[in-house]
Length: 87
Image 1 (cartoon, rainbow, N blue to C red):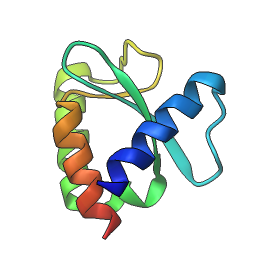
Image 2 (cartoon, rainbow, N blue to C red):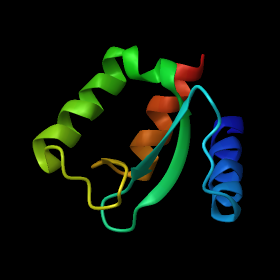
Image 3 (cartoon, one colour):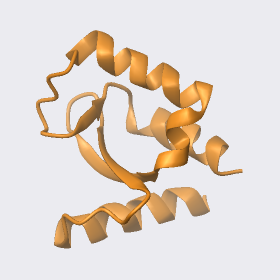
Image 4 (cartoon, rainbow, N blue to C red):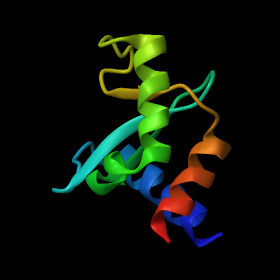
C-alpha cells in the first residue's frame, strides 16, 4: 500500500513540476488515460520491467505520443510491478 501512496504522491507532485530527479525517469502509464510516474533508472534492468519496455516498443516503436516513454499497461499492473521491484 505504501508504494501506491508514494506513486500517487509522486504523480501529484509532478503536476506542479515537470522536473525529474537525477537517476529517475518519467513514464506515462495507462490504457486510455495516461498518468505520469517517476521511477528509478534501476528498474530498467529488471526482466519484468524490460517486458513492459518490449510491449511499449511493439505498440509505439520510437514514437511516444505523450512526449515521453509510454507504457501500454494498466495503472494497476504497473503499480504491482513497481511494488515488486521496490522490494
